[in-house]
Length: 81
Image 1 (cartoon, rainbow, N blue to C red):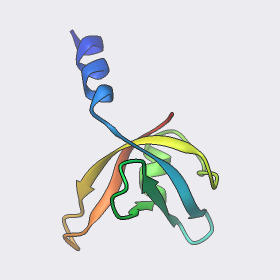
Image 2 (cartoon, one colour):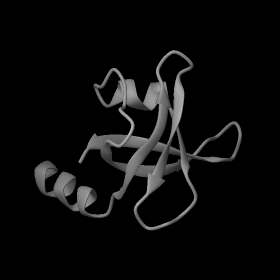
Image 3 (cartoon, rainbow, N blue to C red):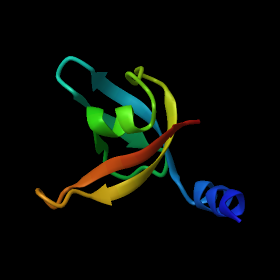
Image 4 (tube, rainbow, N blue to C red):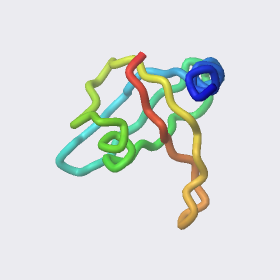
């Protein structure tokens, strides 16, 4: 059942291209494929995905999460596409 849930969830993920990511500063931006505004991505979301960094031009899947502190949208649940 968990596998089916994971597959269904992945089908509804946003996809995009890494526009910029600076691992030293710990943040970057993803340009969504649907033409929406760029999405902020924090190093903690990248590390939670088991990655050390993101590369400019890399295709990724992600969920849009509202940051509880700032109220702004941020990328989470990142996967390599």
